[in-house]
Image 1 (tube, rainbow, N blue to C red):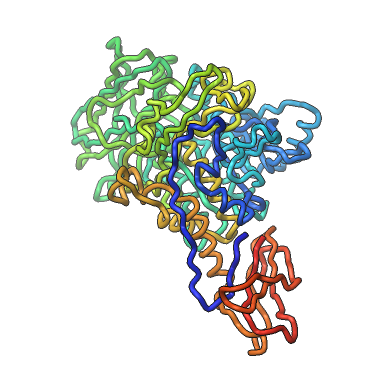
Image 2: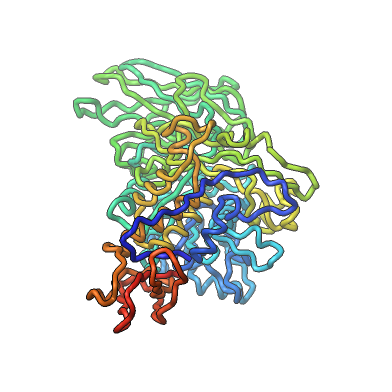
Amino acid sequence: MPYFRIFLTVTLFCIKIAVFIATTSAQTPLITTLLDIDENVEEYGLNGEGVAIAIIDEGIDYELADFRHPDGSTRIAYAFDLGDDSGSNTLNNPIGRGTVYSESEINTALESQIHLSFYDSFGSSTALAGLAAGKPNESEFSQFQGLAPKATLIVVKSTFLGLPEDDSAELNNPTSLYPAIEFVILKAQELAMPAVVFVNSRRLEGPTDGKSRASELIDSYSGANRPRLVFVTSTGDSQGITNHSLGSISPGETISLQIDKRQESSLFMDLWYPNADSSGDPTPNLKVSITTPSNTNYGPYGPAVSAGSFFDDQSEPGIISLFHRSDEFDLHRANNGQKEILLLLQGASGRYSITLTLDPSAKESLPFQDTLSSNPRTGTNPSEFANFLGDGTVSDAASSANAIVVNGYANGASWTNLEDQNRADDPASGTPGNLLTNANRGQTFDQRDVVDFTVPGGGIFGPYPSTSYLSESPANLIKEGSGRYGIAQENQAAAALTTGLIALMLQIDPQLSATEAKDILRSTATIDDITDQTPAPEWGSGKLSAPAALQRTILHSQALLSPNPIGFASDAGERQIKFKTIPNLRYTLQFRELLEIGDWTDLGTETLGDGGETTFEIPEGHPAGFFRIKIR
């Protein structure tokens, strides 16, 4: 158990450096073992109780035991489905979109064995939620317990990438992220719990400059002087490929962006250019033409006629859809003075030419930046730009200044799947200790390095929905999990682990802000021969040291609890110890006569923390010595 010492001394903690060792044992170790925090979790009694974890992704299998209390009731306080507007006008829906399911509604469905339409068809979102907060109800699967198994869950289905063959424009609605964030902010406040929010933003859409509605919400409600709310995201998982272009176009000029589309499924191109020139005068709209691999030409297209309608597109069914928006009506509600061209290429694979023309009336050249994003379910041969190449980029959520942004590194884990194949050192993950091959590498559009640190991201397993796409493949399922647990998507797994760890940090100190959490995690990160000089764009401050982060959080909380941490003799006039409590932790006053020698004795004074201030009275006539507060 942790102790907040009331001493006139400097307390030195033994900070352990977390070093991941490839697992070759017969049983998959606990996630806490992978992060080297078994002793910390046991000593401090950490389990996420009293903390909310929000997952913004593709939903969850709410029926799994991993997300229920021991009595079978749900641990999900709210589920919010932005893909179903049938409940948009109900009283419990503060957003006016989607459908909200309350805890009681989920429990009723569980008791009645009624299946709600809220589900996770692919399965990865459920697995990631399990890493952060899952708790199997059977001892044989205890090694798959998440980091915060008693946390309260808020789950939002905002991403609808679906199955590899299911990638229609309607399922890829970029306007879902900001209402998802608005919802979890409101519900975290309603629950009166400190909260950590995992924003799993996979595709590279958006302005990526911190100015989208989603990014501004994150930055407005978290950060310095805004305690109790922390947002976490990964950089994305598009493998650091050439999916970022940038350049400029001169007045009267025509240029062509060349795109190699390497899959039959849809491909999104999202281009941004200024609404005004350097003098503040409006810029002419770019005109867009598209040439397909069969040399069929479409366009030129200007902006849509009804600029205020998000989905008034110009399209050739099954081939292209074009959304051209002014700075007032872009799909991400960005506050950056930029126009957006969102182009959906639905046709055959091959080389596409996207021709841009700037009217000669323009007073100066226009800069542009552009990303490509396909359904990440579609395999390992991603589409890329062939010219106007920029460095790699990161997801739009990762451009939020106050978000905690992580990359994953390969850990070389050894495991056996249901087909009895040994998946040790999976080449797709990369060399152990190095960045995952699918981790994004690069900057925001406004040229900021945003990675805070890196986290083990491979060889980690979460619960799979029984009817999900992932669960259908024995190759994904770990043998020890008996078909119920499988490999979690790697770079997202790194962010999910970070989410669970921050939930434990918030349990220690519910008043922790995102800025303080970021500082703790960055300052305790470690470097090795691979990370070399840090900070670095891909590595941030280095590799996560989870035990050091928890110890540093204890020290941070100690400073808040005991502004005057002194030892004293009771006959010297000091009669009280005042301190601020953490909800759901038990505090006991202890005594020993000498500073460093002898056993500590409970003085019979114990209180359950409620987040407020409490006072322990020193018993009248008690011998002089040293006192401390023990926390259980």
